[in-house]
Length: 277
Image (cartoon, rainbow, N blue to C red; front, side, top):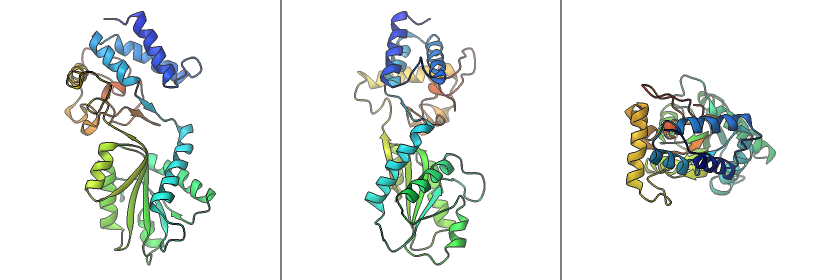
């Protein structure tokens, strides 16, 4: 199928508008080359859709985590935590299963939140393991448990973390708040509908279904479904996990993002995806 010179130029303009420096960043240059190769396997309507979605794609790299964490702590203090309140502030990393496994991105955000709270001279406690809350502060009262991660997609992991924490480690006066640097609007709504308080610095809507710029959403969804059929994407991940339709990549690309951006196809077609999972 190939990609016309005009489309390559447009893609270069999209990268520039997104602040992705092709000439000065090797990772971005590789991303650009992968995008062009990917597009060469697609029909023109699919190429057009991919470029349109890429223009709205959010990338947050580790150097940006610090400023976003500062914003997250500001939201915490301005909207959810009163200085001098009667009860401790406890920061924990997001973990679906508190009894096993290692915290990943949540541990990184916990460290950054802890540093920002220290800079602001806000008293707090923070551990990587939830059982330490029960062991170190068994007589706590009115504690605010701030469970953090870099991204909330469908909300499933956050809801499981809160449910499991409440069942295993919480007392009757604990208040739980989930915080993220970036979140899908649908994931936040899912948490709030389940009675879980949640906040995020950046809130994202579904890339196609909630778009205000695509001329024909039904047609766009059909085109994306065709791309994913070509890739042999499993049903669980069609349009991103739980059909999240995310257009986001952080330190790693979440599986809530459309698979065309992070999944290696299987079958007759093959390309290296633009983002690492």
